[in-house]
View 1 (tube, rainbow, N blue to C red):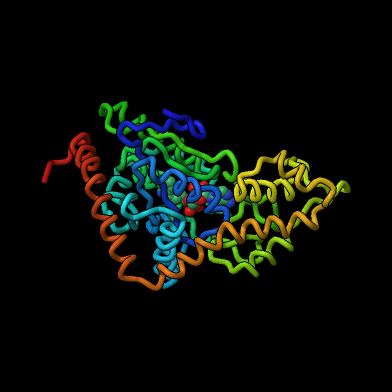
View 2 (view 1 turned 60 degrees about the horizontal axis):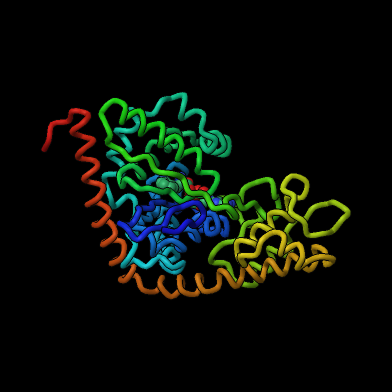
Length: 344
Ligand code: TYM
């Protein structure tokens, strides 16, 4: 048995991991470093379920053609990042009807006050004041259903999703408290480095896929030229020391770049500080850009290749939905029985 990032790895039956991403925008470096990189690194040691959260995506208005393209592209990117569909269950959320069904049941076990306190709900309602719909509000209950259907041990997510995983616990505990041990309580697994990648032009805001290009985001599918341009434009701090040193509070711009460089190269902050000692920000920014280019290059190239093979992608998501449904159905049946629905 070995310890890796606090997670026990064992040769006994594999532990289960589950996570998802909304295809509400093109994947960013943040989605990669905060989530998928972690999934891919553990794909062989865990039984993994990863999905494209299209049901969640429509809580904000989507262009249908873009949503379809992004869902497929996201699947291609999952595979290109190292998630082998033979070993991992990769599926589209709307193909597994049990998500919506358990989502409804859990709506009835999630409290208004709890849902109102969710940071993401508050942020998204502020940004979409003309579309504060019911789905945006009950989103965490659907997310709890996504998770609990599969009884996973770990949910690998970035920092911003921790609150939702905690609410999932609250809902599961409430349900178990009434009906007995129906749901397993999973742990959020947040990476030590890369859990919160900030915008390159506003290092106090999260790098987000739903923002536009000028907001300092880097996409997984960006060309090397675009990536280098974005890093050269990255905001560094207006202190006078012009020195590469990690200090989130006083040097958010440089610290964000150090996090990105560390996550891409595996170097510690101390090693990075030594490497760039006396060089200033002018040398550091393109070096981070190059590390990102090299990290994303193989992923982009493989995803582009896979996107040309629609039949292959279709085979993957169909098989994935079948496997996922099998597991999800068992949990849903149990839940329906517990709450008192008549069996079909
Ligand atoms: P989403 O689509 O906003 O983000 C997907 C994953 O990427 C992480 N992430 C980041 N990590 C670090 N820095 C960033 N700038 C950054 N931006 C995004 C997120 O934390 C997340 O892990 N509600 C979820 C999707 C979801 C889900 C689930 C996740 C639906 N059902 C069940 C886990 C389990 C979401 O909106 O993630």
